[in-house]
Length: 246
Length: 246
Image (cartoon, rainbow over all chains, first blue to last red):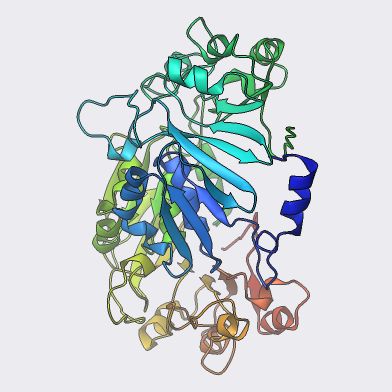
């Protein structure tokens, strides 16, 4: 996310973001919004002996620390920081992150017995990123739009939001799975109870879907579903997308 | 690995290898030769509701079953089969796999106390693949060439072998890590005690390096090290490589 020009300059000038050495990655901070495989498995590829800081709630940290495969995160290089709701932390020079609970569930591989899919706690969080007075929201998983979440997002310049499915039953209808979107802890894009409808009237500048399942027809650039979401003022994120907010 | 033409025809005609459906992958069997992250993390991406059989030693199975993230492998779709040394199993129609111990170590994330890096047991194995009378060896990790291994490989038509490092100290010399190849359980390519020398005189048809670290200069097609291994009759594997044995 690019913020105002002076912030861009500040980021470009920061040695912390442009380290030199025989191997470099621009990644200096990782913030986990969820403890499920699609959110944490990438940590296993961050093993090239470069330091970074790992931010998460205590509950998400506990899921990972219980799991021995993540001992691959060398404690001499990876600094764990537990973060709490509504308390911004500086995750890069001039960039803050502030987390908040959104309805969701425990990771699939930690499910036991009856599963509540709209818990509001430390297992699924959204993030408000701030830099130079501008801000953006990043919410890759959300089971339900609550009144509190709607009020938090109202008037935002930019929201990146959970776009897993177009329709709650699309995986079962296509015989590609046995679960609905709701069972997986995801609000679907379409319909009277869907995300597009839930955002209507919230006066948000840029609305962008992320975290899109490969059954979602809106992934196809020429589908009627893509046309419908674009007509409603939404975009679908793509690799290499550059976002500007002021 | 392509075997004789009649076997190729047999594979092509097998419905088990060419399933139809809304989503298909040609993967029907997975055989683990090691329990470390680079060998097992790929299992986390095999979650598209397709059945497959997972072959491994009891010890490697135990590493994975202890680790809750692999509960993502749905037992209704993934059949675990424990395999033992020197007992071929049919992993695809007309294709057998037979495992044997090679010197190695426990996975990095399971290391405790002093680590033996040349254990010969169920933690690191090689595979002999057989089809239609032809055979090939696949050995992605090996800490040392033993007399027994040399005799097993002698006269083979094709061997795919651990090519992690060119030189045992290359990671420390380049300040890219604190470990030698031996500490990681890998024999290096070069030198009097290296793999190229160890294979000399074993009368092996095709010798191909796999599992190559990104510090290994032989990865570069125009390096002196690549020229040296090619002069010794070796090749470096690449994506999309097709191998023929008769």
